[in-house]
Length: 278
Image 1 (cartoon, helix red, strand yellow):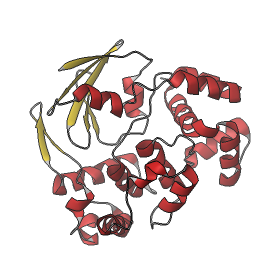
Image 2 (cartoon, helix red, strand yellow):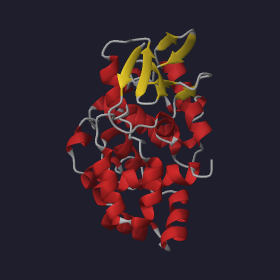
Image 3 (cartoon, helix red, strand yellow):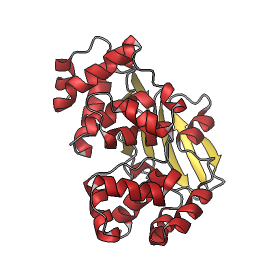
Image 4 (spheres, helix red, strand yellow):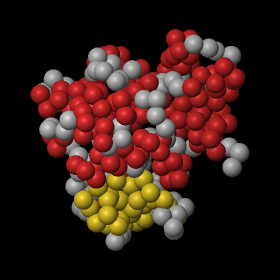
């Protein structure tokens, strides 16, 4: 186990549970086991210290800092958002310490294709089913976990195989994406280099990826904070608090008001709406 001193505001619980991460497990001591690309980590926060352990402790502090974006200065983003929209002040202050994770791009693509018209328990179950069947088993703290497979590991997986993992009608979309990756028609690293508009358009060329799914992929895997994923919950908030309706109008409002930090704003709104009454 290592101790990591946190230099900036950080809320582990809010960051893990605010909808960014699907494959995490709350432990009895209040810590979280989280399945990353290459290892399982356990993290617990006590004030300004994170306690972290893993089945693979090589570069563990660097891995944890990167995954939770601990070295980014969110105060700049927060000040910008409050200045742009006074109505957002309560949500920003309430969520101060929530950070944006840096997730593996392939797993992010797969999980958000699965997320379309789907609930969180079903998404988590499908991802775990794929990992159990095709991923590497890891034993950590006397528990068995499975890393999510790489697209190369899924090269020969059929639509029916995906269906058996309970992904529903999304089976064909997953297979098409994996085939394109293995054929070199899509290269995941290129999305880091594209501007957001081009990246969104390129992602949406693929079946099963619409504006919301593409936005989530770019937000959680590629740190493109100027996206604004719109779902039913967002539409309700925009109607209730801003009297704005229609995806086009909402997107225009977000772009004009929140600009390069639109994705941060939506996470704060969601976190505030979900937790303020607790």
